[in-house]
Each structure stands twice: as C-alpha cells, then as structure tokens.
Image 1 (cartoon, helix red, strand yellow):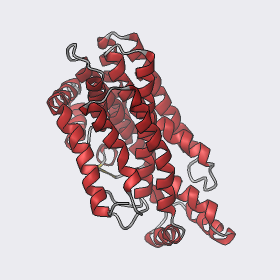
Image 2: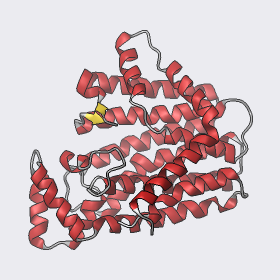
Image 3: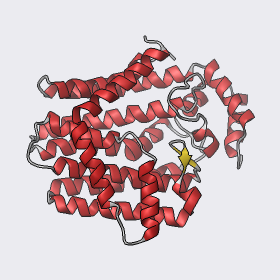
Length: 337
C-alpha cells in the first residue's frame, strides 16, 4: 500500500500520461468547444466564456480521444468533434447540478447560478445540450446519436433519482449505485465506447470499452464521495464536506449507517433532517467515519470496479494506449486510508 504522497504522484502521473498521449487533439477539442459556444446573445457568451475559464480536467473528452486512438481510428477529426460533444454534455449537467444543489463554488470559483441566477444557468445548460445534439447530427452516425442521446436521458433520470432520495439516511446501497451509475458512469461509458464506434470495431471491442468506462466512472465517483469526508487529504484542491452540507447521502454515510449504534443512527438522522448543517455537525460525522474506518471501506468497494475495468481491456492487443488506460484504473487500489 502506498503513502499519501505516492498516491498523489500516481494520480498525477496517470492523468499526465493520458494528456500527453492526445495533447495535440485536446487543443483542437478546446477550440471546437469555444467555437460551438459562440452565440448572438451577449449573456450566453459571458456565461459560457466564464464556464470555459473555470477549467476542469476534460477527462471524458480525453477518454474519447484515447479510446479512439486505442482502436486505431485515423479517419479525420470525428474523434475531436465527439470528444467536444461529450465534454459539453458533462458541462451542461454540472450547470444543472449546481442549480439543484444551490451550489456557490465549483472548482474553487463562483458558480454560474451564484452570479447570474438559477434561471439563466438552466437555460445556458440547455443551450449547451442543444449544441451537443447539433454536433451529434453533424457526425451523421446513428449509433453515436443513439448512444449519446440515451446517455443524456440516463443522466437526467439519475439526477431525479438522487433528488427523490435526498436526505434519506437509510438509502439502500443498491440505490446509491443506481444513482452514480446513471449520473456519472453512463457518460464515462459513452465516452469510451464512442472511440470504438468511430473505428468501426466489432461488438466485442465496443462492449469492452463501454464496460471499462462504466466501471472507471463508478470508481471515480466512489473516490470523489470518499474524499469529501477525508480530512487528512489536502492535495486534491477540493474543500471537504460539500456533500454533507448539501444534505447528499453518499457511500461514506451509507456504510457508516450500517456500522454504528442505534443512538448514533438517530443522531445522524437528525443532522440530515436539519435545513442547514454546521461545522460542529460535520466534525461529529468525521469522528464517526474515522472511528469506523469508513474511508477504507469505500476503497474496498472501489477495488471491485477497478478490477472489472482493468480486466475488460484484455480483448485489446498490448499497446501504449492500453497501458495508459490501465494505469488510469489503478489509482484507487493503492490508497492506505
């Protein structure tokens, strides 16, 4: 098991390898996104421009580009167009997420809705989705159109399911995985499968990349949810506790609820029933999570999906691209917290 510093280096290295592999195309993806977001309406330009400046890792776009490269796609720039499309779907869902959660900070900067209001943020998110569908139609492949449109629908259903169970402290683990499978993993799966579709690979290779993306997405979401309760990790650039203060019941709380006494269960129920939770409430939760070794339990769950993701790549011949994708799956196994 590695140290925290080794983990940081491993995450940075696996991501850097991915970026370096397709960096030339990623630049073109950024240019495509900027061009597609141009509008005759000044407010749309201001809000979309602000969103672009907030950055992000462009992980889903990178996965589309790397999967296409793994499958030896070489016919023009469709991978660039669809990587931009996938990234815009993600951006639109973030805008809608922030409205639903009344979020004020995203990636260390003020959210669109906190500056321009909820109505404008919803409409600009819809604008991004409409531009995505234009790009899908321009691509002209019915399989791609079917995949990305159904993925957009699945993400929306995941949002509704999460809203339906908001604050439900005794939510089933199965329900949690349905939510993150729809909200997060579905777009990862679509991003990687697109690469195989572009290269006109057979069903076996399409399904392998789709399976890889889904399980990678599940792992990333579990890691993200666990890090929100890990006070010992400082290097991720993320303020901890966001999910708790927003009243979201994620995997750490679900696993904690399974292990604690009835009196502690009642206490946690009361906390999540409050309109607002404070720092003292959060510190109480953190102590329980540390006492019951919940972060480690989360990563044990993640290991299952990591192993599935890694093994799914076995249908592909050995290559630099395959190694890069496999390295991206390994980060959550090495944690010692």
